[in-house]
Image 1 (cartoon, rainbow, N blue to C red):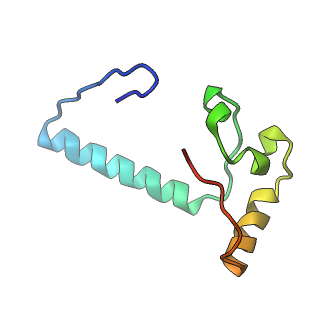
Image 2: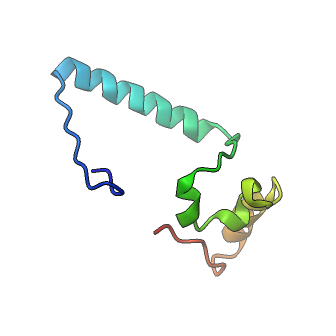
Length: 84
């Protein structure tokens, strides 16, 4: 469901097409997990994002997110931004 419009989209696939979609999705997940380069792109969704203080698109240093993640690993008491 598209939350901003309340629209539900339905997709009908053959078992073969569903298998291909699953393989493509898993390959994309692996590519994302293996990457350490995530260029920023401001969109309307940024208005709700709690990660703006860590985001280079909003003036944070390129290392801010990495430093924050390392601090979390070293000290689990640091509060992490929460997704809505």
